[in-house]
Length: 511
Image (cartoon, rainbow, N blue to C red; front, side, top):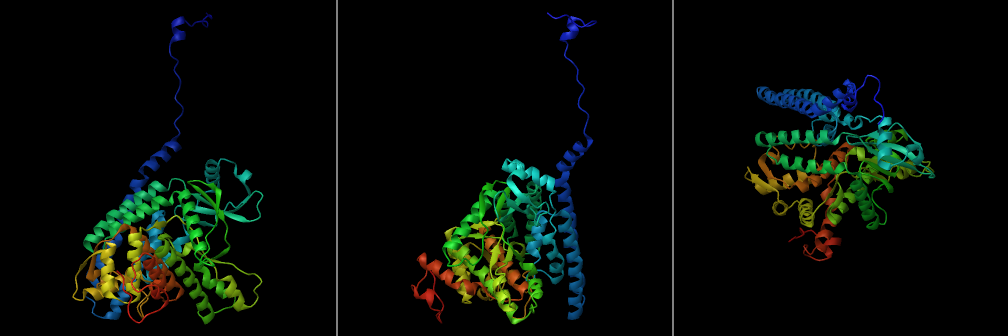
């Protein structure tokens, strides 16, 4: 046995040694505390601001009824919308995350007041960016290799940032073509789930007091879809499935879908081909640069072709496949750059602004055949202006309504057109679906299938896009042959093959 140190007895040596605890990292403690309480802080901020906006409108409604002059009333409403727009903008901008998606949904020119649209449209480009050093950490953890080993070049500044992820342009080692690297923002998912549960509670209140529509089911479907968006492996599978479907069912696919780099996909990182193009929100600027009048016939023809391509792609996805991209907001639509050899204005516009790319497959929907075919019947009812079949289709789809008017069937058709078609009535630029004279006020939607929300949102986003481009068209009319084909192949269309090729004077009959 070794001798004990001088002055140290055997019992001293066997006594447990006391070690000093590590010094408290005050900053780390503050960060953990802030992370723990952040959901409560966001909830408090949301309810304070939402209550302020809501009570502002309610008190205004009491004041405006005393003004008898219609023009003065309209001016008062415009001012109130401007006040509310500033408050909604500040709430969405300050809270970010899920509220940026809310801004995309409500800030559409066919649905929201002009003051709202003007303020909220700028939020699409204002999602916070994750610093590059954090991006590197995520990439190296997910892909298992150093960034410099994988990429010949990697742009530190993202080319775009959204509520869930941001994208960087890069080039892989040994390749000549650029790629896009999509990287998830760390720590975003829990906060977004907090936000949507607050919205669900607000939706329940609103549908019991002001809006006779099943908003809660809509928010439940949003919760499900947003949860999916955090799985990039699922997104890659969806992108490949839709790409294959569109390329196999057309001589030329109506929209371009990015190719996935399969061995560089994880739950939080997605690498895909880079598509060069112009965001659709900047289309008129691009047309003007070419010396072409954005409101002229040539530009209008180009816009019609863009909408035609998008509408065909969505008609095929929803009605023929049932599996579709469910988020066609302007930030996800790119006008591809084409032939650089085109020198004339006409050729330049024709080639360079013809192909459309559809980006971001985080939100996709797989409709069961019962809903797909039920929606096909509703499309035919809308295209034929048939109120009886519209009512039948609503019942088949499980949309439960309660009538508050005498001419129920006529209002049911108007409700179907408002909800599921892109066409605007003559002279109307904003539908105002929740105004006193609207169909939704006359016919209460008491139950709405969650799975149909993605179809509803897709149609409304296409309508908002068409209004923004100044083109009024009916997606139901364009989808008629696709709906007929889907019903015929399922044995649910009477009249045989002639209904696929002949535009008959009488209405098509579905079973």
